[in-house]
Image 1: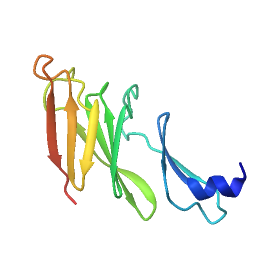
Image 2: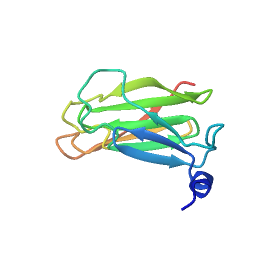
Image 3: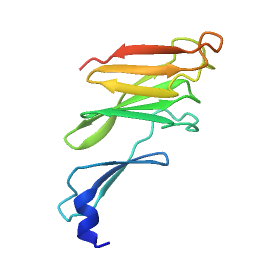
Image 4: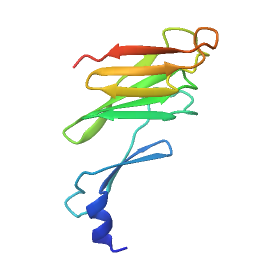
Length: 128
């Protein structure tokens, strides 16, 4: 495949600890793909980081069930930054962050180990 063909399809990538997400954005001034690695600010165990991912506009939600947490990243002027970390409101063993979704400013987080294994879903509203 010619280089120009690849860049016309996917020209920007976001790399999340081994998970590669492509978005249909323009490359840099040279036509090269731009790669950004997102990791949590906290120096915690990153096993399971990015087990689940959801995006809406310039907001990216990353589940880290091994940490029982969800990380929210924002993009401003083309640069990604960590906006916040949401910890499980219940037990550290509930696998909070196994599934995530976002719609505008509302985040839905699944925790299959909550409530003695019955599972739970949590809804959070982000501040803009």
